[in-house]
Image 1 (cartoon, rainbow, N blue to C red):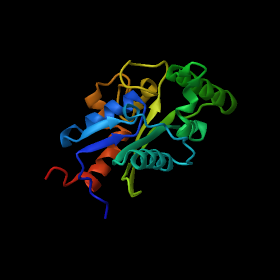
Image 2: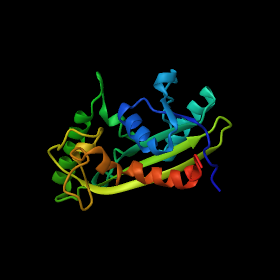
Image 3: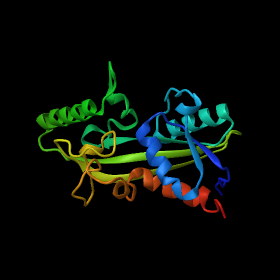
Length: 210
């Protein structure tokens, strides 16, 4: 049985403003106070895990043990079938440039890789999925982890200015708007993060505030 969450304050162990906003919005109904790791001066640990869950757990545990408060961490990325699952856990690293992270650069990089794969192999599928791992850690080292997914395909050129990361090229299965074109509420209703979050809520927040 999962450990229930019953604290008034929760660290969101991320320095990504987009993720901080999404997670805070998902937690709104629980009236739990959220604070970003950056606001507490908590450093970002090196992501040395080989899976999304491993990286989410190490980030959550690093913040929880250092701050003495429960911490929720996210590790997520885009897995493209024609690229053998890349960029996957390296999704943020694909956006690294000399001037910091640039996801426009990363999306162009993916499109170039797909074009190269097509030139070598003929017609390829543009199917992909967003994957999100959420880990909730306590200062005593206990951790609960959940993984969510949303299936879709990649479009080009980029569409929409909403969201963040790879959202402008991701078209969810059965949809006609990219995550970059959707209003936040519509994206939250179907996203990989929402999938993982619903599992987290069922397991750890079911009795919160009761």
